[in-house]
Each structure stands twice: as structure tokens, then as C-alpha cells.
Image (cartoon, rainbow, N blue to C red; front, top):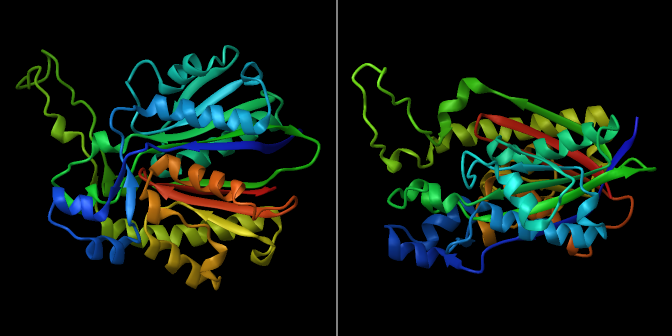
Length: 328
């Protein structure tokens, strides 16, 4: 079996910064209402860039950071629920944009847990020898899926992308992976797809489709209850798998969904909130890009040293959840 490790990271967010005060000009809300409930102060919103555009820019930064050639990449795993199109997959579009001619490409759909699922999959591909170099991307253009009249959701989400390069190594980089799903709670966070509409459907709905149906709908209270418990379970499972104690972890990089979720998780784990890397105030919830962006910012912060252990953990629509522990 081969070891898998992260050798480079990168991220990209749109230049357009939308503050809570800006949101108050669009919908009935306020900075106080948003920030006290979520911890969000601003988010980045695309003014035209699509998911593949941001993903490619994040990927190129990760490739530069890893000091590899784009031709070295064997696979591109792109986690998103806001793809450019049904066909082609967004990973193939990114392949074309960056020139990764030797890569096999496909998308992953696990919402906010997508990047963690991608790291897990890349680890298994590398361990078995199926791949030597994998580009894992989390990217979302959620602004195109938002109902901008729903203040319960439109204030929460942002656009962006993050990426990591994973390769084989003599030393173990990935120490543990854990994942799970609970489809019985799938109704709590949804974006509807195109309905079945053809001449053989009773009462043929015709060819018209209301795009308003394909917007984010969320039961925030149910998500909150699920999130804290499953974050703690994921941390516990990762520590069991790795044989580590929580004291061995230098930083926890959580999914940036809500500051209160992170705070509650820290309290129940008995950890100082300073152990958690948090950037939700600047980006909002960027879904599959969330952990990827945070990991890159942590990596570039100068606060990580060789041998430090980082625990990434998240949850998302599906419902999905999981985490990864890496040694830097």
C-alpha cells in the first residue's frame, strides 16, 4: 500500500464582496440580524464567473504551490452541486481550461462534504496504486441557485473554489478518513432538478420549467441539530481510526456553515475555539469549497509546521458527513 499526502493547496474567490449592509439593500435584513445568527459579515458573489472558471483558477494555484506539472495529474475529482451543466461534467471543463491532458475527470455531488469526500477518494486511489497524482477541487457558484427573496437562505451562501494536490509519499500524510450519509434527512436541504416531463407522463406537464423550483431550500433548525452531533461523531471516529488524541490535533478545519455550529461543537468537545480555523465571517457558506478554502488559508498563514496534524470535518446536504486527518 502507498501513502497519500497533500503537497499543494490553492483557492480562488470572486472579487465582488457583498457585505451584510449590501444584502440589506436587496432584502429585509440587517448586519446585526445576520452576524449574530451566523457569524457572517460578508461573502463573495460571482458577477459572471461560473463554477469551472473559479475551479480552474484555484487548481492552477494548487499546482503552482505543489511545484508539479499539470501533465502529472492522473485524476481530477471536482466536488460541486452547482455545475456548469449536466453534460459535460465540470471536471472535464476544468481539464480543458488548465491543460491536464492526462487526467480522468468526474464530478462528485455531496454538497458541503464534497471536498472531504474527494480527499477520501483520492487517498484510496493513491493507496491502491491506481493514481500517483490527484487534483481534488471543491467549487460552487451558489449565487445562481439562490432565491434572492428568501432572507433565510440568500444571506448565508457565497461563491468560491478551493483545491488540493495529492500524491504518493514515503511518509504518511493522510492518517484517517471517515464518511457517512443519512438519506432519511434528505428533505432538510434541497435543490430540485428538472422534473420528469415527456409525452408519456399522465397530465403531460409540457416543456415549460420554472427555474424558481431549482433554488436552495433548507430547514435550518433541523440542519443545526444534525450538524453539531455529526461533527462530534466524525471527530471521535477519526481519532479512533488514527489512534490519536484530540490534544494531538494542531488545528480543526470545519465546514464553515454557521459560527454557532462551530462554537457549539468546540464546547461539546471541550476545545478552545482558537483551535478551530474560522473564515466564515469573510466568505459565508461556500459549500464544497468551504473546507478547501479554509485549508489553503491555514496552509498559507505560516501557522503550520512539518508534523502538525490537521483535522478537517464537515456535513452537508444528502445528508452527508465525514472528515480527514492529515499530517503536514
